[in-house]
Image (cartoon, rainbow over all chains, first blue to last red; front, side):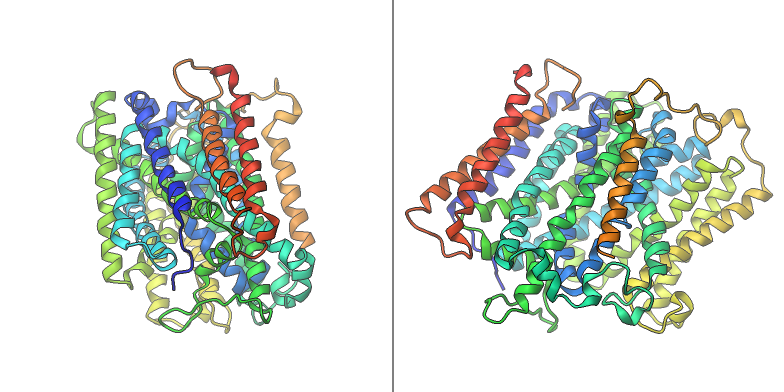
Length: 554
Length: 71
């Protein structure tokens, strides 16, 4: 199935990437010895640096490969994951949630839960996040090795150990400082390495309109076919797209996932922190120009007789959609450009892994180690613990990768963990930040029961304990629809239980909540800033652009 | 790493410039070599290696020039 063959210049480009990231780690070692640099990247970054790192931490190669292939199956529908499934949540984070996060000078999201509620809320979130991050990191490592093995013919063990080893070196040396720096480089490599595929594809196909003209209506529109699940390839209506994806999953991920929010914590001041996700929203909105356009080119080629473009089949007989982008790279790219494309994918994998590891070492060091084992640890000792945790986290990821290699079915569970943790956490954070009556007991039990509810619904659907209709209100079977609805129900349960228990228990006094809850926080002092520098102006522009794109492709 | 001047740390934009310039040189150089031995890729006649490599070099140089005050 190998689709890409590397020449000598391609190998030089790939090896140079490893040399660059390790050189960056070695260079930053002297700065990484300081606590603020290791865990907060110095907290002096501009909004641009933090914003690009923010979007890069989200920009995994698996996502790019997966959604390019997904476009061949679902068409323009994939854009929902980049537009309604991201932009409103990113803008909400910047405008309304960042003042609480940034102003409280915390190192992590569990740190906010400690200030707003209590220790048990912090520990519940810290442990669930740490476990989720290590497991997800391991699965990503395994999938990276599998992808490069299938597409380029690399040995899986070598791919796992070399990429994990390089990450271990530069994160152990420079901490979050290294992670942020390599994420910026990864961002440019992805655009320069992959955007050319779309450009050349559009040239060969004679433009986007030529492709859209041939695409079936159910694949070429975003909303026009969502009144009935039978009318679109994803088999969902607009209700789960808006409530499940656009509301719960999107807001749960973009506003509470520490892996992302940590990048905004590195900003130099509150205005830069608020601008971080808003700047990132423009780049996120532009990603379909790589992912969706390349997928549409592949769809057109696969439906053009004599194009020579065939999507390979997997062992189970299904089409191997993840191979679509590498096939296009192989079709259009000569030597050296192939190396650049492969390096872009590799950089995407490694930056995502580095993001996981840097978030894990912060949560472990501050919210578990210092909270439970050594409250009086010195800054130097915390950096040392952060470095040891980095190595331990990577080793645990490697173990998880090997478990996934042996037991493929375990991946379904691990990949579902994300919605078990993040969808309920969004309900807790929303109530915690915007309703001062929310109590510590309400938050704790709401979050715990919400996570259990999401887990039980996952099992109930997987083992067919219940009729999916009672979850999705649709007779059309759809894994995507079930995932979106499950997230919505988990969020609703957390929201309702948190309110119920909060009303029965004693809230904290207002003076204890200053700076943590809306209504008890000083408004951000932005009056001195000219209008075109204010976050609200750029957020309005981003929202208008997102709306225009949705209307254009309605 | 950050916009606030700090004498003892190389700016991230300098690193970006070095990476783009290096890769641009390699892609452009290989593209020029392909003038002698054209590759058998679709649209290879458009010489993507030459103009894309050139574009990367220009982008890399711009990052380096924009950051020259800190050299």
